[in-house]
Image (cartoon, rainbow, N blue to C red; front, side, top):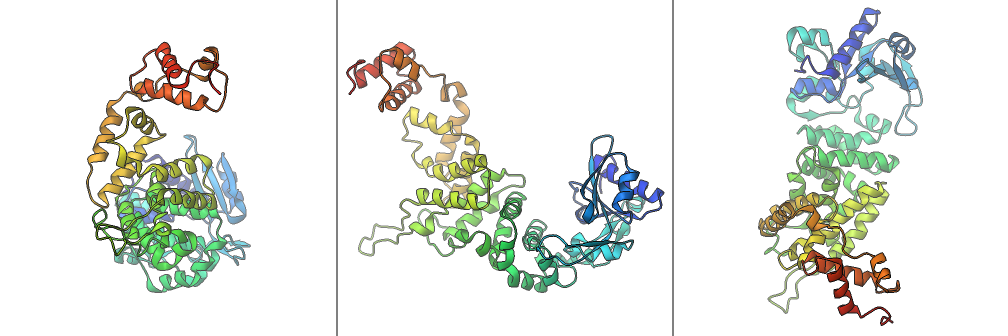
Length: 461
C-alpha cells in the first residue's frame, strides 16, 4: 500500500478529488495501479479523467500542455510535484507506428482502457476506496482481466496483439521489459505477434530503443530481458552483434561456464537494480569482440587452447559502432568504451610498475572498472585474487598519490632550455613515472632524471 505520506500519491489523490468535486470522473491509471496490486511502491502516479484538457487547465492554477492534442496535461502542485493527467480517449489510426493520427475524447473509462498496451497496465483505481479499505484489489476497475493476469504471472496485450504492436512498435520492447522486471510469462498470442513484427522495430527511433534497452539492463532482471529479446527475434534487430556470441566456445580452464553468450548472461544476471547504465552496457559489451576473433586450438599442439587474439581492440570498434548507432552521448560512449578497452588489464596488476598501476587506478570512474572485473571473474573461474589486490590498492592509496601535482610540466622543460618537439611527451612521461614511483620527489630530481635519460638542452636532435 502507498504510504499516506507519499507526496506523489498525495498530489495525485488531490487532483482526483478536485476533478470529482467539479463533476468529472477521475482515477489512478496505468503502472501505479499495477504496482499497488503487486505491493510495490510506485515511482509516480498518473490520473485518467473524463475532463477534457481545457477543463483540466482551467481547474488547476499551474499546468503544462505537453500533449493536449492527445489529452495529456501536466499538473504541478504548490510543492512542485508534477502529475500527468490524461483525458479518457479513443485512438484513431497510427500511421507512424508511434502516435495516433487523431484522438477522440471520451467519458467512458472502459473505452480509454481498451486502447492501452497490456492488461496489467490497463487498470484504474479509486484512491478513496483504496484509503478506506487498504486493499488495492477492491478499489480497482478492471475491464481487461489485468488482475487475473497479474495473479497468473502473465503479460498479455489488450485486445488483438498484432494491432497493439502495429500502433506503437516500441510496445514490443516494453513487453520484454515488463515480462523480465515483473517475472511474467508472455502470453502465446502476444509472443507470436512480437515474433511476427520484430523486424518492424527498425521504425522506432534509435533513442527510444536505447532507452528501453538501458532500462532492461538496470532494472535488476537484465539476463531474463536479454534472453527474451533473443527468443522473440528482437535482439537480432536491435543488437545483432550480441546474437553472434551464441555458440562461441571458450577455453574451459578459464571459462567452465560455457560459451561467450552464457558468460555474458551470467554477468547480466548479477547486475543489481539501479546499477549505473555505463557499467551495465560495459558488462553487455565487454566481450563483444570475441566472436570475430575466435581461433580454435591447434590440433597438432596438445597444449594449445582457444584464443581470442585482439578481441579487446575489435570489441572497442564494435562497441563504438553500437553506441553511435544508438546515439549515446559522447560522455557515456567514452566510459563504456573505456570499460571494454581496459577490462583485460586486470590480468597484469600484480606485475605492473607503480607508475603504470597508479595510472590504471586513476582511470575515470575506476569503481566501475572494479565492478566489471568482479562481474567478469564471478561469471567464469571465480578467482578474485586480482580484483582484491586492485581494490585494496585503489582504496589504500590516497588520491593525491595516484594523481599528484606534476613536478615537471612542458613549461618547466622549456624554462630548462629544451625546445618543444616530438620527444616532449616521452620526457614528461619519464618525469611522471619517476614521481609516481618515488624516484623523484622534487622538480630538481625530475629534471635531473630527464637530463640523464634524454641529454642536456641543445643535445636533442
